[in-house]
Structures are given as structure tokens and as C-alpha cells.
Image (tube, rainbow, N blue to C red):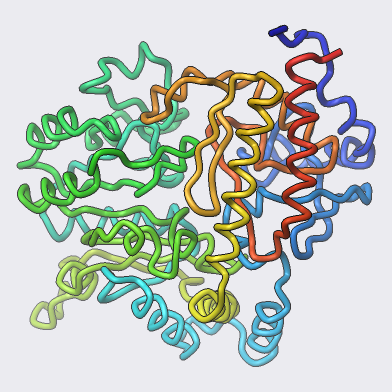
Amino acid sequence: MSQPDAEYDHAKRLRERTTRSQEFHDRAKAVTPLGVESNVRAFDPYPFYIEEAEGSYVTDMDGTEYLDFLLALGPIILGHSHPEVVEAVQEQAATCDLTATPQPIAFEYMEKVTEMTPSIEQVRLANSGSEATMHAIRVARSYTGNDIIAKPEGGYAGAHDYALQSVYASEEAMGPEDEPNTVSYGTGIPDAVSETVVAFPFNDKEATEKILRKHADDMAAVIIEPVMFSCGCLKPRDGYHEFLRELTEELGIVLIWDEVMTGFRLGPQSAQGRFDIMPDMTTFAKVAGGGYQMAGFGGKKEIMQEIAPPEKDEAHKWNTAAFHGGTYNGHPVSAAAGLKTLEILDERDVYEHIEEMGDRLFTGLQEVADDVGLDVNVQHIGSMGQVYMTDHDIHSYRDTWHSNEEQFADWWLEAAGRGVLFGNPMQGERFFTTYSTTEEQVDHALEVAEAAFRAVDHPY
């Protein structure tokens, strides 16, 4: 097998189709760092700027159309601008905007969340996955009286300081595989925060148990994705979640399932229904808003009641409870969009369709890569997965280090230049199918994927 030529421009086709975006990028960089609204949207040679989205497609400012499997990093499960969701949004926007007083639509939405999610007895709303995990961790600390939390290395649980620990780092910084160091991701995070977070290796029962038992007396919570989509797609193995549920119950540690990515994506009862595991707390976002800013956290009533101050301590009530607030919490427009989305998910054949399309797409990607002769390992569950540029087994975060990140980015650029977005160009991300995805679209995507695989294997 030939190796890609480092001088070959895999972005050439994309550059030719996005000249207006290239020019606009200079304007964007003048007003904001990197010329993007979020760091994850920046990539070389430059991001293209989207102006329209409908169904399975997005269109940039050059008029270039892309078959979209990025799907806004996961929220778009019914297809872009689903007409019933748009109608619900328009009706709510025309009826009542933000008031910062309770609005019935938010409670109707919360009732639907609790109806569909087995472990949630009470729930509160937020505006992003990061807010949801931040508040869930705070409530768990209040409930237990402990400060330390544990999370799997490689796991992204939001953009706040306590979550930006052991997300990405070098092997040297991470330290021993069976007892990893806690390493902050990015600058500006106090060392004192890192000292309250313990990392453990996903899918390693022995090491996980050793670490949790060591810190159990001071540990408030374990926060973990049921499927580690924060580093591509790492599926649980050998009863790992059953083991972790039993261990946290024994040790009195709150088990938080971070379902920001998997919530309402892996079934109407989310991943916990799929795996038949009942966490103590759950966080959700993305799909939950149907394309609008919606997130939340919930769980056992006795834990969620940490937010409510004791009535007897009226004089200092807010100092005797875990504070949760936010002007935009339960925004009526987002609640309307989320409620309509959840109703559709609960009543129609959405999961049957998106998982059929997911199997067709991800199985097909493995097949065409094998036909090309490229070392590729495609992992997926349901409607979401990732392509790893390696033939190495993928069970833990450190397994992903065997992937060729540059080759993945080149493959993505080749596919994007041909009009298909397989997520974004970062190996640690993932991509999805949606309700508007068709067999014809998947088959076309596989043709493009094969051409892109050949381009990175034999660039000339």
C-alpha cells in the first residue's frame, strides 16, 4: 500500500468550490478568534460558512450543497428544518417570548422528558450540555457532601473546568494506563480544580474498581457517557456498565450518565433504556432540543431535591441548597421545538429508520475501505459512529491513538470536496444518520467515501 504524499493538496477540490467562504473567513477572523463561533468548527484550510439547511442537506454561501452527516454534532435527528418543528417554533414565537416567569410549555416538555426517561423522577432545564453536566456535578456534590468526581480518560463532559480534565493529552502526560493522571485540557484551568477530578480507563473493570475504591470516601460522582462518543465511538464491553452500576451503588457514589450525545438518539428511552441500566442522574441536550438550545439534568427525586432549600431555614435558604439558575432555562421557543421533537420520536418509526440507515452507512463504509485495501476500523451503534484510520482494535481511549489523524482529515476533505460531510475533520468526533436520510443518499455517500479512500491511499 502506498503512503499519501504529504505535499498533495487534499483540500484542492473543496477550495475550488468555496471561494466566497475563503474570502469571508478573513472577515470572520477580524471579529472573532479563528473566525468561528466554537473552536471545534475551525479546520484547515478554512471553514465554509453555511447559509441554508433542509432535510439531509446544507448549502454554503457559495451555493455548494453537501449531504450532511455532521447534523450539527448530533441535534438534528428529524432532518434540518423539519416542518412540524418549524411550525411549533413559529407558533410559540408568535404567542409568547422569554418572560423569566414560569411558562406552561417548559413544564409540558419536562413531563415528556420524565415520561420517556426511565431514571428521571425530577428534572431541571439548561441551555447546553456543558451547563447540564456542570449543574449535575454540583448537585451530586451537595447530595454526598464530597468534592471529588471521576470520569473516564478521553471523555468530554462539557466545556467547564471540572469537565475539561483528561480529555486529550500525550501518553507521557496521561501516565500509567491502569491509573491515569488527571490532565487539564487547555490553559486557564486552575490546578486546584484538577485536584478534584480522578481519571479512570473506560472498559477496564479491574483498574476502574481500584481507582474508585481508593477515592471512595471523598468521591461525589462518576460521570460517564454510556457510549464514549467523545472520542469517536467506544462501546461498553464485557458488562462494564453493569459492573460500574453495582460498584457505585456499593460505594455510595452518584452515577451520572452523560447522555448529552446519546439521549433520545439511541432510542426513546435513550441509552439507559437500550442497555437497561438505571443511573442516579442523567444529563441530556442535542437531540432533546430538536435543533434549538435545550439541555437538562435529572434523576432521583431525593437527589434533585438538593436544589430546593429547606423551608425551615428561610433566613439563609440559598446557602443551604445547590443553586441552579439561568435566565434562558426552559426558553419557550426551545421547549416548543423540543416537545414536538420528542413527540415525533415517541410516536413514529424514527429509530427504526435512522438505525437501518446507520447500519447501511457504517457497514458500507467498512466494506468500501476494505475493498480499497486501506487500514480502517469503523465503529457504530444505532445511527451514530466513526471511521478510525487504523486496523487496531478500538475499545479504550488509548486504542484511538493508533489512528492516523492526518489521514482521516485528508479523507474528510476529499469527501467534503465531493459534497458529503462525514462529520467534521477531527478523528475524535463522530457522525450520524437522520430521519430524512434515504437509501439513495447513503449509497451516494458510500461512492464518495470510496473515492475519498482511494484518494488518500493513492493521491495521484
